[in-house]
Image (cartoon, rainbow, N blue to C red; front, side, top):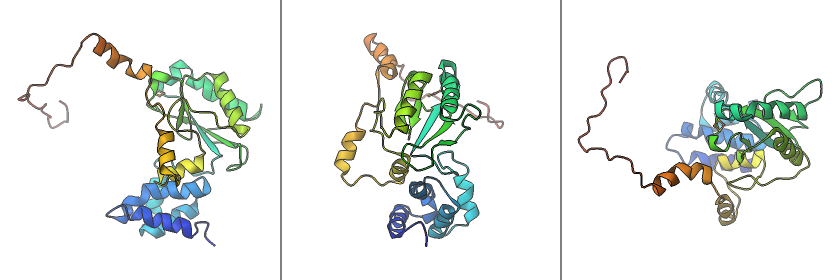
Length: 244
Ligand code: FES
């Protein structure tokens, strides 16, 4: 019997109906199968291929290209630590190393995308390093199931994963309340809690903070404005090599 029951087949049909071509539905379909098993399994790839009339090789090519699709089972929570340039300079590498050490054993720190605990069970945590999460002004940052925790230190990151391991869901710095990896995967497939009004009111948390708005505020306070573009400004020319 397929792990993808009638309710998932029904959701797959709803996703496919959003697009003029069924193959365009592949990305949300991969999130959908990920919401069932916590990763994109071989069975998930075959399910997507059958629903979308694609070859399994085509589905597999997409599933292995994007890092948001996991090929190994994830924990209840996915912890993504930004180790890109700005966060790395501010301590992101130390945070990632500390979490690997803390969640692993003294002899064997966790590797990237390894899980502490049994995948899918309450309190299990998968860690990964992430490229820039577009929150450099709050660095170093990490995300749990794509919700932000800003201005982290190795100590605060350890306290956060310890809380997750105990089954707690500490409030993110901004955005929606914390759920879990499979629920977020379902939301990324386009399916939200039944009471959408409640869901939207939760998501309407603070999304910008003083650090992000500081430049615009300074310009406003000082009366700075951007020069207007003349209507007849020539478009930049491009030569055959692509150089401007
Ligand atoms: S470098 Fe970490 S959010 Fe940009």
